[in-house]
Image (tube, rainbow, N blue to C red; front, side, top):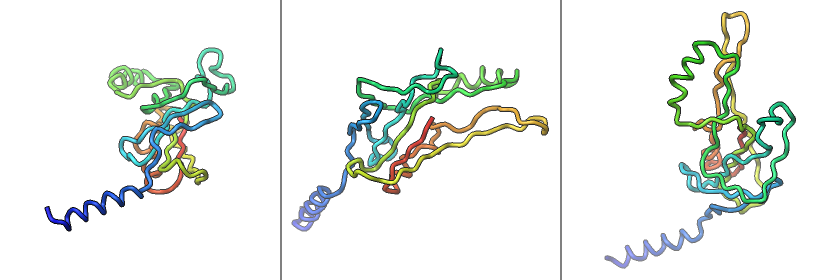
Length: 179
């Protein structure tokens, strides 16, 4: 091994000491409690906080009530994307057949718990950054050409097109999406 090669490797290793590395696994104190982040699987330089609840689950007596603030005494450490929101209003017979035969094959879990945020940031050591609030779209199916009937809703924070780690990796911003 030549001395030039050893010097080049040494320079490379020393230069890596000065590359900013995000604080992976950093704990963020929120008004709802502590949230622990982890490295994004597709963009390891981005810290992601997935499925952060901002209100209690809207089931039972909370079903049609205003949101009740979520507060936790234990740190929240989301590791995977939250469940996809269920949305099948005004279902037709054909829709029920499709759901029974195809949706059950879906590997993505579903839940009515829809009051969650996902947050991505490249470097959590800086105090102030611009925030991009990403609101994903949906779909209203047109039936019979005469009236709007709600059908399958498209878009979820589980959809790879709506995940913010790619934007956070390219820009020095915080990306927030809501379920």
